[in-house]
Length: 340
Image (cartoon, rainbow, N blue to C red; front, side, top):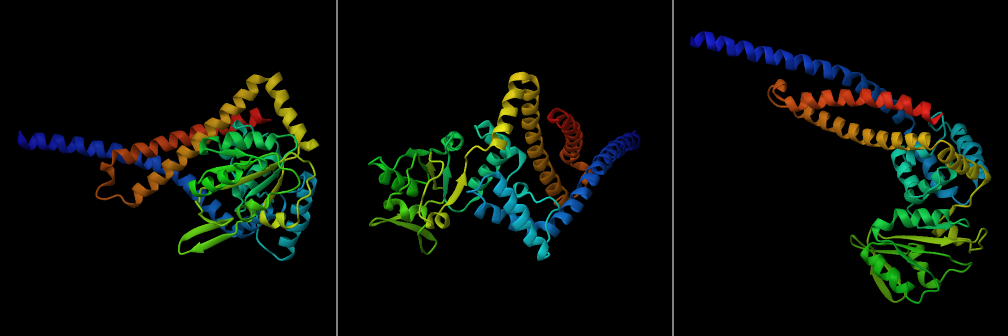
């Protein structure tokens, strides 16, 4: 009887293992296609990453003050022409935004009031990726509305040059690590804040300091400064261009067209607008989830010990990942049609 029971238990164990093995092979099969494609995509991207990053860096550094037609001219004629002449490898489509931001980030900006047109997205990318502090030219007040909503959760301090407490506000923010917005500036900039916006940083060991007046302030890495003017054509000294990142938020005709189109769609077909927004949000969530799953799976597979068929959690994660990627592909197709 013992022999018989042992044989039955062994048989059931083998059957269970066989079932898990089939599930594992099935789940890995679908991941293999995705991962093989990822390897090809990454290999292709590695060949052009130098040019793409160089283009994105040049874009952040130089094109901020210009309107759409000048930006396109600078990128397509000057930058891309220079890359081609010097055989610098880059992607077939010259798009700095693919390096500087992603759909999820842009959707978040739009939720906080950044207009959905191309120029505004470029402005958001320049502002969030620049090492220098930003000076935004914003006659229609679209940039400042977005700024206030986006950095509200980071305890944004809003002040003006005419405010007698302005220097104190900046001093506390530099050391405390809060962002500061100086709004409605005229043509002149107070010399008191010059060391801050020009990033006159003194290094002592690993600590960074900014000298403001007769005080040395410890620079908190979370500190950020935004300068804002409503003037459509301000006249600042030339060195401002070197010390700050100038960003032109002036609404162009093309930008206004894109914004009006988005508003008309919201008004005329609120169902489509809501569906598109919901799809974007859902896809963004899916992308994050897929990335987490993939990282977790690769980690588990690399560090698996003993019998891999005993790891039920790994097999279930693989199956869930397979189901999710199928679901995402279906949703992507729906999103394309809705977008059109």
